[in-house]
Length: 225
Image (cartoon, rainbow, N blue to C red; front, side, top):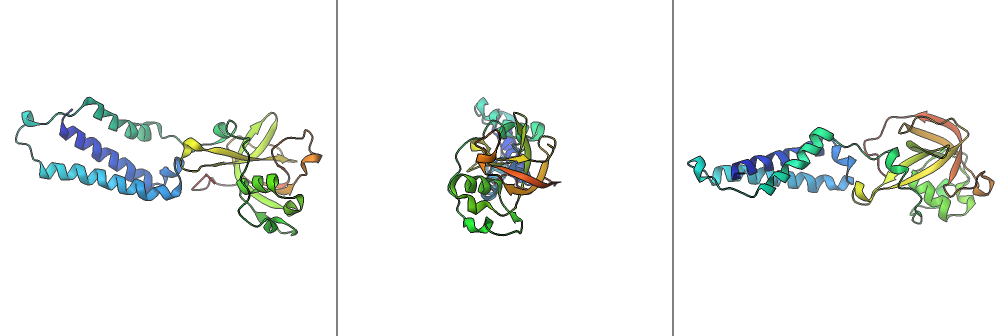
């Protein structure tokens, strides 16, 4: 491989970075704040490849500098994103990455207590409240938005959470009782009320709600919590 080819690969890799930033495809793999580092790295790659074309002109092909063949690996990210285009994590991953303890809630639990008004709540927040807060914190009806996952005949409203990127993703899920199961990976908003785990049959570790309404919704721009 020559330096000319290497520069073309750098330009291609930079263009791929710009594409996933401006189409929001980067949200399939990393947190929203990663938009700016990806954008900056992409612009630097393109700038360096263009600079080399003008600053280091070559008079003849035989004067081209050869670089290691391992440089062809720069082509792999572009091929993966253009040919395979991996989607965001869904039910398949969630059904294999659930069951971890939730962190203590960072919001005031009184926001979901003592009111008849429906409270829009993150799935991860509801799981955290169910594990850490007293039952009186969960008396209000809630609306949970997520995709459908299934396990052992039950179905769940589910969201994936990431700290940095999809590689560290974990699944948060709430068992839905009293409504027929939609298709796996269908996005829904489930309105319902928390079920005391002592009244569940069978008694399971995942929190559960009795559904009063299940509405099909569009997949959000950012699918992770």
